[in-house]
Image (cartoon, rainbow over all chains, first blue to last red; front, side):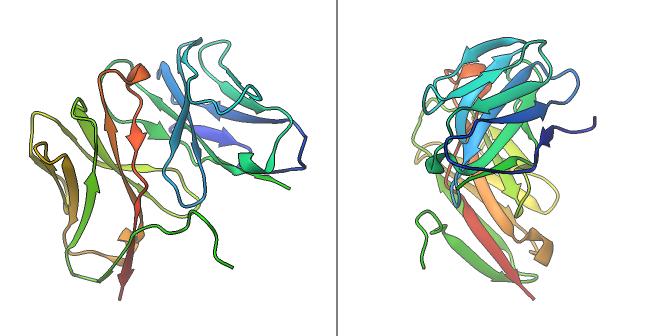
Length: 114
Length: 114
């Protein structure tokens, strides 16, 4: 597609449920990032993939968060046993390899945990 | 009631006036800076970027100024229009950032009144 596509756009989960958020990056973009954006805050880095390799997961807030990109294209962010503090917008971004600059963001998946 | 995290700095300008949004950064090793615009319910959208070997860069109606001495970045929007109303984030990257990930500031809300 022309841009980064994320689904679902909105997800409501009961506390304790597992959720999976999908990101389809721009074709040809080998770098993929997940960010978490709490209400009224700037995006916070979660994890980074280069192709299928997860090279940095230092921003994942707990071991309940897991991300994968098995074929180097589509990525899934999974949150197990969701908690209320997980409520946020989860943004996916992709970029060309190397220090070319701009990250291209999707519209985000808004997660609300009740 | 009041919610934690909604206290974004807010700039209110009249349509047609010029806007200046400021941002401070802390990492003297940062070599790339970028401004994003985020409208409600959407992902961040690229506005303009600047590398650390420059102190000014101009785009269409926008100018970014970089003062590395005081670690300050500003975004100037000329002849502000109602469509410019959004939250604006500055972001920076240092060479040590994994995959050239961006670190975002907290954002400034720009409100343009007719």
